[in-house]
Length: 322
Figure: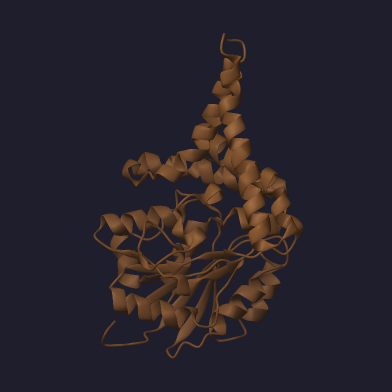
């Protein structure tokens, strides 16, 4: 990349039933201060909500191309978009995400400066309703996500994974692209293979991207159930990719089940240890985040955090990958 400071970049975006958000995501990807050439390649799944009509309108811009993704799968869509892309740098984007104007320029600069295969930053959750604001708070706390730097931020450096990612095209080709067998955890799985092949995945806080969290508990539960289920699938393929934070939710579920089992024993008092400690942690983080952020949505953390933890943990332990 030293020979060409700002090579052609292709933003690849898998889209399915995204009529509400896709126009904004594409507009943000096009409205960049990037000095080189840039395009957006959208892989469109079988949507039923008017997404096709919106994409047809967006494709009037010569910088936007739409390719079919018959399966609707995220990984399949990403691979289809990468195959159609012309850039030597590939920037992943979701229909729910919004690139800041400096994103592509800084990503390419960081790729060149670090020699990394993939660079990325923070998933900057921004809620628009009371519940989604609570989810945004939960997704940026240690109790909610552990030491995941792409959620909580931190210093630049090599990490296990990042949000979205901007890749050298040859690095994607080297590891065979995204695993289409992964319904969730595609990014983490890909970044694991990049690191196993000798590459570096690099985090930089300059690459924060706005993301809109779920706004209903049912949708949040389903999302985290799938996260847990597909994390187990990924770890079967790559057991050495396990991180301590991924054991916390199933550990909580196991602890709560064990607590119930303690009730009919001679030590029923032991049944309150795990739920009592967890409740204390929930109340503590609610108080701290409520004061720190000045947002009444923090009051919903005792509901939102257990939804995330229990759904992830149960999905990991008993979820069926479909």
